[in-house]
Length: 66
Image (cartoon, rainbow, N blue to C red; front, side, top):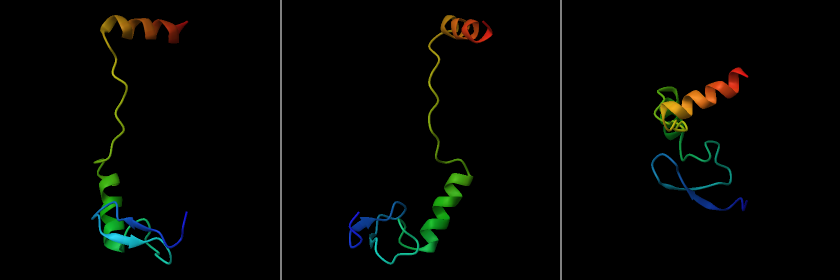
């Protein structure tokens, strides 16, 4: 990665340089703390795989038990 590259802060979208930025990829300690708080409050989630039907669930359960 080019150290002089300008990126957008993931929190506030302000342009910020990568080089010599102790808070990267954030622009400031404030944005870094806000993001950490969002993770702690479980605002970021990875969706689970949906189980289609009860029959699909029962088939998967059988595979596990065997």
